[in-house]
Length: 136
Image 1 (cartoon, rainbow, N blue to C red):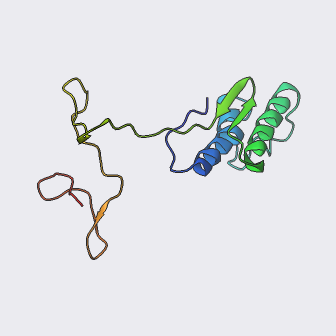
Image 2: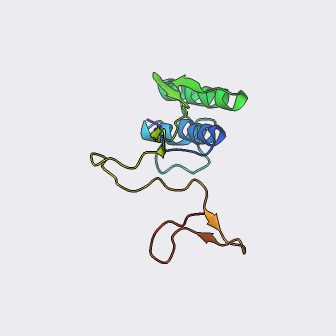
Image 3: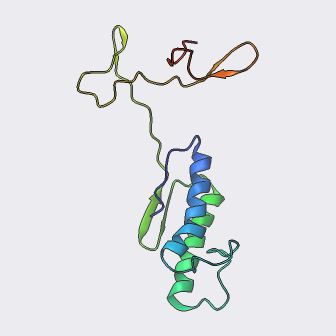
């Protein structure tokens, strides 16, 4: 499958899915040899591709083209539904502000800052001299 990781924007996620549909999935499914030239993909199949393989490659290319055509968040190819989804950071917030980690939490680290700290020269500071995240 074209499972992926988090992306900064939906556009980045669509670009990754486009790559997965046209380049990676055909190789995983042995529709294109893994040692084929990098320019060979579902849109530009190897010479002599016929039958079921050609039909599946065309299906992958059509699904990828749908992603490029507009703000499409879901496509289907070869019996699999591929979907772009949004996830959000979760932070428990109470009347006194954000909750501290609970003893049952697997990680007792405080949430990381969303934006890095910059000094007046524009240097990014990830940790201070004591190894703690700086408070900006």
